Amino acid sequence: MTDSGLAPNVAKQIRSGSGWMIAYGVLLVILGVMAIGSPFMAGISTTLLVGGFVFAGGLLQCVHAFKCSSFGWGLWTFVLGLLTVVCGALMLAHPLLGLGFLTMLLIIYFLTQGFVEILHALQIKPVQGWGFVLFSGIVSLLLAYLLWRQWPVSGAWAVGMLVGMKILFTGWAAIGVGFGARSLAGR
Image 1 (cartoon, rainbow, N blue to C red):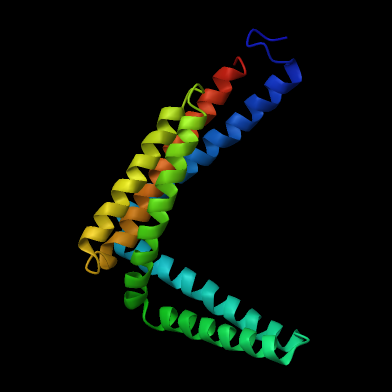
Image 2: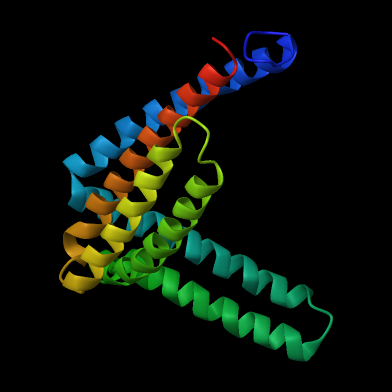
């Protein structure tokens, strides 16, 4: 047994996993800083990426509609797939309007993420680094509030800036948890 009370192989696995968690956190911090440094480009890039995924998903749904064994369900699947293709195409063709839509989705995302992170932090409270997770959850709730307050004007800058900030704080939380796990395993 190690001085932390863990079996040597378990402690080794935790140390190894904590290294990956710390590396993941550092990468997220770098990406977050890059997004904050160029929020408009990060927002347009996010819109184009999401639009491409929505468009591709709609195409796959249309193809799937022809594989359905029932005409009724197949027709509905095709109509929904076609609607999805149109939404994706609109986001790709008009990324600035897509930013407004994504801003509304971000409000919902940050609210949900904030509540989940706060609950998670309270569940892992004795573990070193839990405060970073709590802080990340509080930041998520604040970001949701800021977006809601300035919508729809906030869409032009907010997607890139706020996603960058969220990535940055999530990175710091991952680094904190990684170091906490490392200390638990008895470095």
